[in-house]
Length: 114
Length: 114
Image 1 (cartoon, rainbow over the protein chains, first blue to last red):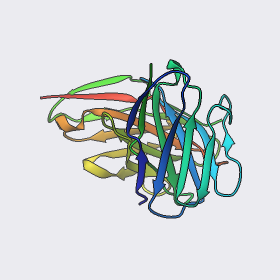
Image 2 (tube, rainbow over the protein chains, first blue to last red):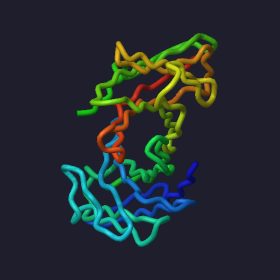
Image 3 (spheres, chains in turn green, blue):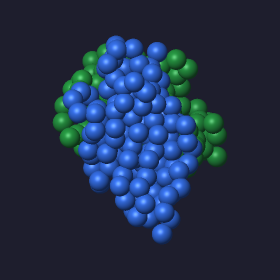
Image 4 (cartoon, rainbow over the protein chains, first blue to last red):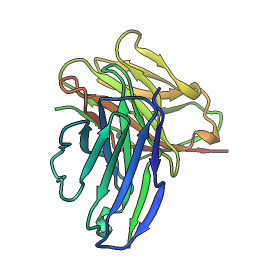
């Protein structure tokens, strides 16, 4: 199973600023996924990060607000830009290894915007 | 379109009693079903999955789930609940047409009381 390290684990940020979240996987994976979990809610997929190409964003999420980098097969970053209190959520990085395996998750980044 | 429903926001059970957390799904094609658990301030931990084979799937920490195709259900069960099982549980289905996508239920908070 993949082991995912996510940093920071939590942060409190001022509105209008940006935060970059890092995700490191202990093995090479083709795709990495970023999810948002708003308070008391389920997980919503933000985007899929592919190495060597632009990330693919889900409906309702745009690159200007959530720019993603994927410089190699074990690492990705998600930036939450120009933050507002509505961005307060847990952000989770995820990978899977094969079509018939489960998804693995990082421990999440709990973001509070004040 | 794929979807997952967890009809109960919360389940309360006494320690030592059996527990059931309900999940129903809607998929086109074969279902790939998963259960995850989330403890406070943590990411999602994989419990078990159904891809194919026996309808009764055994997973981590004594949990099991029963796949019922006719009722399109995948309920999570445990014969004897522990206080430490108290957490948030998510059912998920993988998109059979796009294996990159997981759809998560709204989550069920399990409270096990001593």
